Image 1 (cartoon, rainbow over the protein chains, first blue to last red):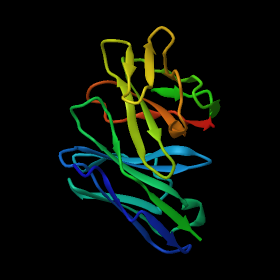
Image 2 (image 1 turned 90 degrees about the vertical axis):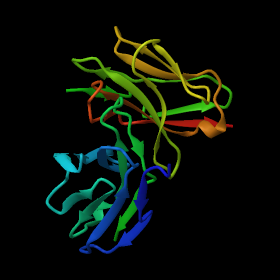
Image 3 (image 1 turned 30 degrees about the vertical axis):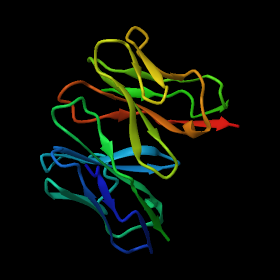
Length: 114
Length: 114
């Protein structure tokens, strides 16, 4: 199994631009999670999906952030417009509904907004 | 609601010395407990987990953790650390089977000094 796949691995963009981060979960996993990690705030859960449906988006910072999961094998996290304070590492993770809650993380996307 | 407290944000230790990383949790229900490790510039990887049964669980690289229900703790230990153990370690809790979410601690950075 290839594990959770994220793209791009690095993204540098200018303030005001739209940024789209992509995630492919492990095949057969029902739940998908988007996290953000910064030095100041640590690891934060942004949103999670179960069976492609958003269950809890209370961690999404503001309306500039949106996430979609059009099918079981693909999800996107979009920031529009981006701001320098969005600079962080964004992780995607997936898990099954029938396990212990154990999550498998992707390698992350390091976003820098200048 | 659940919470996880990792009291030490940074732990420096000399190579071949023992180490303990502390984790305490609070929950009103039975829990599953996890330790994740994050090496520099990588995603989080599961190190070990407690679901049920023996309260002492071990990883393949020499770490162990003991579930203590009365003290609501799940401390991580290793009798002799290596340079390669330098990483950030996260404790996490889920509220058992069928739970979709993990609650993470803020992490402990372990630095192994040659």
